[in-house]
Image (cartoon, rainbow, N blue to C red; front, side, top):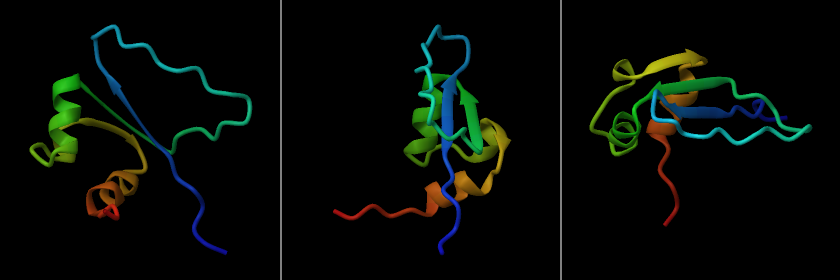
Length: 72
């Protein structure tokens, strides 16, 4: 059996962004990153590091996201 599924959540701080409600069968996120929309996008584009965001939970989830190379 493989590793347990891990989920990450990202939110924008103070921007009035709406969170989607979880369904009854949703697995809670094992990690979350909080920052402004600009900070989150810069992180995704590799221009900011994890230390620039507020991380809660399992930081390894985001390290795996950074290392992930999607198939083209």
